[in-house]
Length: 232
Length: 111
Image (tube, helix red, strand yellow):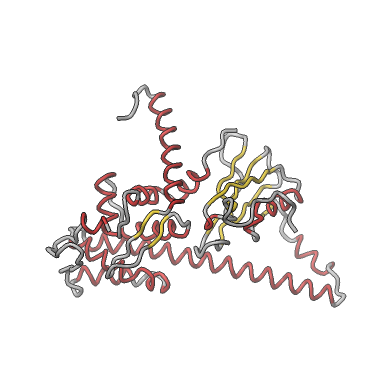
């Protein structure tokens, strides 16, 4: 790798291609950095822990104050934990909605009717419509249909992208000056193993001007082509 | 309507650290320490290691970079084709804004 030959570890005199780092693992600075790294969630530590500790040692050996290195890890660990918590909450909320839907279907089948559920649905007034991509290969059609059902003047266009971005919201535009009133919804990535992607949009029901949402669609030859057909 | 480049928008949302990392990886794979050193040399920014890993995770999730097999305890990363395209689109958009800004400030073209 080119970087290894150009960037040898600080404080070492090892031959090219070797990686000896003479910074003691038991030094106070190293312990401080390791303590900060332990604040990351377990999945992150399993993936990056050793590498992060190695990088911390190298930065300290290069003259970075250990508390500064540790603080950087500590802040990022807090953010990573917050991100995981938010993701977990979203998943639980989604499971809750699915369970409520299943319960409603069961009640309906039992003859209880949906009238019993109407007060729940009307409990919170709707000021915005949330649309999410659940079928990445037909993201254009799915979002178009969902928005059309609410008579919202939002066009959805597809842009060929790499596989990992298929089904993701790439950008939102509208014709008036000022901040775009359409919010982007984040969630588990539909076509990659990443934990968070832009998977939908929150559109105000009183949107004042036409807008456009751009979503990723498969490149030609990489999967299903984009479709503007209606959703289910 | 003047639509912005979507690739550029993706990278803009990913943050400045992501741009610096992609720029650094544009001339070949690097591991964390090499990235920090290289970014400091060409931009003057000293990325903290926590910021670095957050950005690396984000870029890998977007498939703009790819991790290579670890060498001892160092994990090298390389830019993907999608990453190169996103970086190029982002740099184009920045250059356009820069040109307009410089023109309006009567600064003349950048060196």
